[in-house]
Image 1 (tube, rainbow, N blue to C red):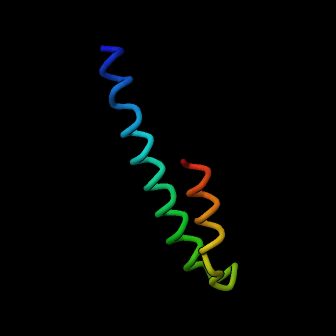
Image 2 (cartoon, one colour; image 1 turned 60 degrees about the vertical axis):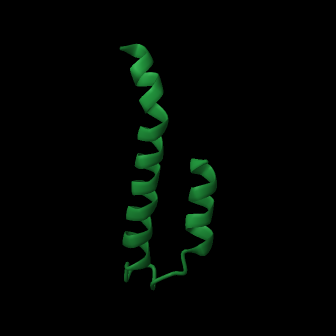
Length: 51
């Protein structure tokens, strides 16, 4: 059972990282509080950290 968890954990991490980046990009890019900032650097750094 533990080997199954070890085999599936990278896929779980990639799915979670993708959803977190997507949610952050959608919420942050459409926020009026931050005057709709460009996301190239922000999502780029988050993508680098998730790798």
